[in-house]
Image (cartoon, rainbow, N blue to C red; front, side, top):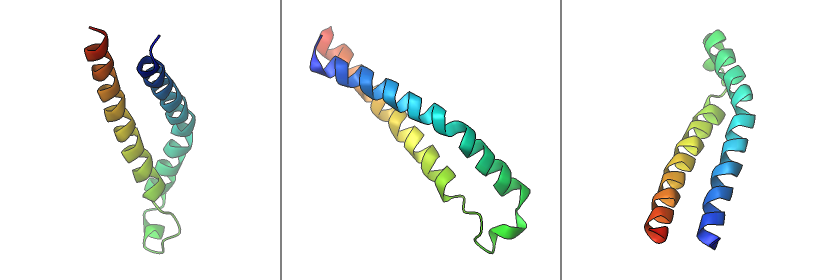
Length: 76
């Protein structure tokens, strides 16, 4: 197999494992933020990690799609 295929499969599998492993903690943070809306003004609970997790998941998805399309164009 070619290096591009290994990079594509490794990136997708590794990224998926990381996203799934972080999913539960992000769900808890979102529930905590929703539960304590009043304390958001005092900056005790920050929504930034959740936002960055969503941004990372989106970037991972876009890069994965690019790598898959690139792999099809190379191997076809």
